[in-house]
Image (cartoon, rainbow, N blue to C red):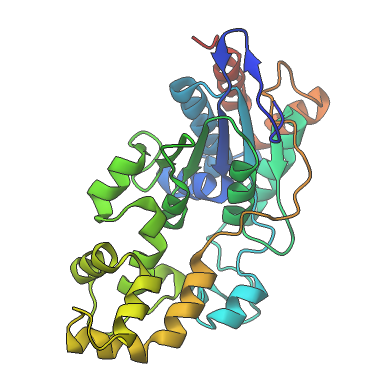
Length: 315
């Protein structure tokens, strides 16, 4: 399966699973006890949990292709230029991301294991994994499942093109599948307007302050009444519109923020990522490397479970 065209296995329509890898390994890190150790005493729960998580996802959703998308730049300069506070709460003084104890070594192990196993990865040095996911989803005609714990990616949900999100906020075992109706039920807006909603309401995790006096309920009403921020700004500029004076004033005063925040929050779907063969492997690409890393991290059983999951027949 390549991400630029349609492939099928026998009579089964292909399905591409795009993994927000950081979402998965962080949930593995926090979801498993710190007592899980490698033979040398290092924490290894994130490595074990990551591949056990992939196994669960593969068995449950039966993808024919999989790409683990990595953070080339978790906080790109161009987004900081638009929104100086973008993800600032998670940044160290040197600009790097604040990571928990023992995380960096485990991420390096996962990133070494994926290509050795033959699992496709994708990244770009100037973009976030979200942008890479959006790009790969945009250029394939196959159904797509996006696996993430990031609410921002609800903007990719598209029932017409069969794009859904497997949301990991409550962990792998309680992952939720979101199509358009589920997004609308949870947030009150269609996926195409999720960014408008988030920018109006605010999102502290991404450094979005929101618009003064506009909470979640008001944001939903405004988005659905005026058709998103573009329509809302037009209504604010029109003295004859039905927009209440208090909200009109708030929208006008927040005009520059709204423009910048929408651009910063909208995923980029045309990142220069090479064509990728996302086909699930029948055997490890580098068995010796897999064996060495499995022994070093004590994750041989987890890797075996993962291979058994991707070898299971597609119904």
